[in-house]
Length: 193
Image (cartoon, rainbow, N blue to C red):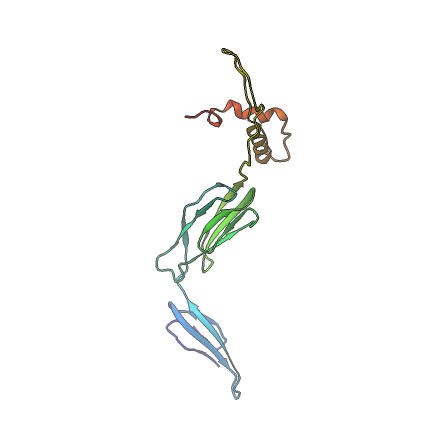
């Protein structure tokens, strides 16, 4: 014998088919005729989330850098308004239960924010870069006479730019040593605007 404790929330027929009626909670119980054996199922009829709006999203951060995501679940009448945060690769970025994203190590991952009921979600790609640990100049000392000039190169820029090209184009492209100097053609790398 099937029975609902709250038929305003959920009803059950003689075959055990449950139908949600309205927002609320009900316990569905089944008992065998002529026996004291019973079983119970708790049913929670909810207003599901249909969308999530995200703010605070970043596409690129450095290892060690943090930023906070804010998630707004819609509709405002949704039963469960909390968001669940996940990362596809914890070695690249971590994300706390409150939406604080931390760059961990160089690479790419996907951060997904889902509604607590699981019916709505938003994702974005995140690239984490490693910070430069030092700069090595091509010369450490220089003696010039009045009117002479010399050029110094920051080897770290060459190396980092070469790595960026390799990361961007992948294994299918041969990244030669000359590409490492391409950064010098881009003024915002060295000119103080």
